[in-house]
Length: 228
Length: 247
Image (cartoon, rainbow over all chains, first blue to last red; front, side):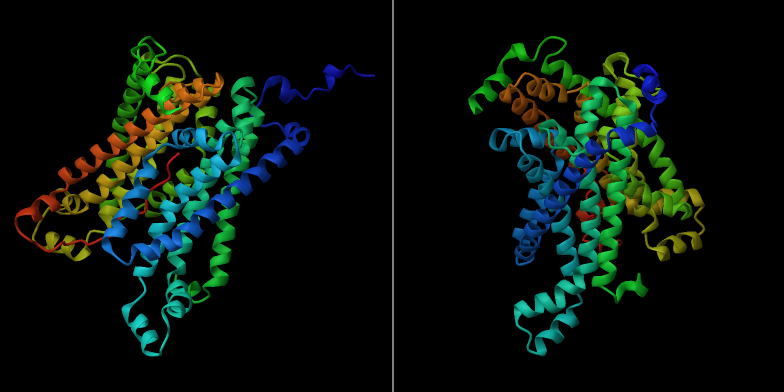
């Protein structure tokens, strides 16, 4: 019979950065935090994209709207995340909505620029030929312009997704930071194994999401496979 | 609510003392300036050399991708609990050294990438022509490459400044120095008006810094100045770069 104290893993006692026992003991917490991190990130980026596309379409109609959109998003981008979440606090409280609105605004900034750049990069001759073939505006957009803009839009999506994963940790200030919650917890108890695990998972999540988007891009734009 | 925020921000008592907004503001500005000076002193020469030689491009461009993927919060925490420690560091406050190192680390990627890209994207024909005219390597760099890439380099400086200010705000989450402390204090005491007041202050100063950086960008760009008088054709047309990650 061994005393309970003897069962405590040595790395807990030493407060080591790398502790295998932590990963088994805290599997449910780590899973929950990762799942929360992932859904908050995905929802934020998707919301950002859904707003960015019409905004970019609007912006290319006139230089005035374009400078308004680009200027406005730059201002949002300048505001630090901790401040942005705090500014939303009176309206949406301690909820995932606070984090999602903030993160969606940041991804919107990246995406709107890339959607615009992507559409502007479509060669004029291609647009003219499509018009000559009798394409309506909507068909021109969905069949010609958006597919040709896709590589640049996807590049923006990668940047937005990766930075949103990192930024989501700050959501911990309103208790919805996914892996950031584990980091904030560790500020108090200085639990190094937890800091290491949460940080590592965060970076892995960013890399995994990036790979998924690259994969999706290869499937969606097979013609770029050899070119790039 | 808004009235509470306003009265908090205008009450002199909230600005004075060692944990008043005034002290935190000075602390955060000091951190930001120090980190920018260090990062520019280290990053700019390295990236300028790499750009001039057209070498280490993979590293120079990918450092930004890595910088984006690593959470600021994690780096601050690891440094303050790790070898650097969280002791008070001169005027920089608690965990001052850990915060400074983190700020420099997150300022470097936009500085390095923009400087490298700016210099390598200068038209090769122009560079070759200058060499053909007998300019020394140093002269090619200082009279051709640097002026033509100044606007891209300054954009990098502006992005780094925004990043540093945002990172310095987050230092408060690990009980570090700076204005973020007003926000975290508000959260701890369930005083929403204090949270919002701190956030308003942080956001306003971020916008002021961004505005100053834009002015600096215009002032420092020799091409823009040269074009003001004569309507010379822009030798290196380029799009605005995608902004780097905020934190």
